[in-house]
Length: 358
Image 1 (spheres, helix red, strand yellow):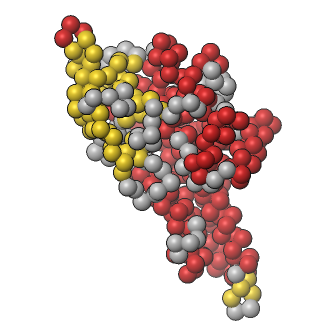
Image 2: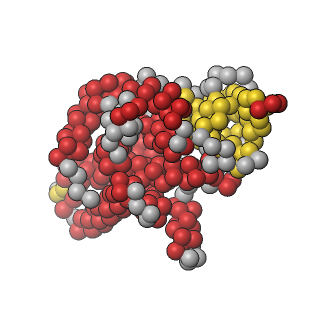
Image 3: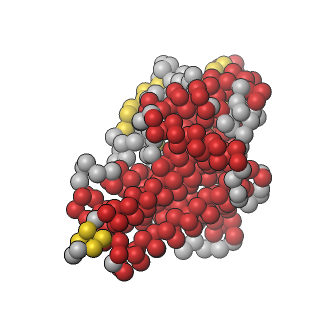
């Protein structure tokens, strides 16, 4: 997939803004000046009406900076869950705030380390006479869960997995910040004890919604991983040119050249996989699930390998707290497991092809 001139301009704008605004402080200008929170939101709900290609561009740039802004959880997970639900009233009520960045959304979905909708055990029971639903269960790895203003929860009803809107600070809701290896990605555990929920979409349609969101989430995360891996390689190449040993730059040694060349091949192969998933999402291709599984698996492993090489080729400085290498390595480890490890996605791919996963 070749990016358009407008998409390249979007890349430049995001990169320039991230250079001026560090860390979480970038979220307000990203949403106010560029509108990243509403890129994939239809114009009727206050968004830009763009698609997966624009999200891909933004996620690559956020990955390069290891940005902690809540784009993945809010602009991808929450937005796409609402759109996939087909609930026009809920979209009209929630999407404008999310698109403008006035609210941060999240999707409480994973349980016991699994993002497979079949593994959901949280229960939702309708109140007497068709009253408010009551939800009980524990959700893990909830992105930006302690800060979210819009909380969507997947729970199981008699009809199957369904999607609910839950008041983040409502009765029966406890949000606990989780200390993770990757401190640049905020996660939380959400404990629900009879919490009141409003049904989003049709009862029992949650499985379909979540599987579609999983594909789009993997495509977006793959783009982020490519951006981060590319930045690892750039920093390592620059260091190899500057670091002198035995009277010559270490990048001039054949062994180092080979390792950098191998890292370059990994980054570019991962980029192709991530772009393939984005293209499948743009086209609404029936191959989206396969492309997303390939991208998540390939990009996770490429990022982990290149981040490891970054530490190795930087030598002693690469293992110090002051150097940025450990931050990329921790992000690589965390994103490898987020939305399921590569082995699980290869299993999804093999099942779809009627094969046995390796």
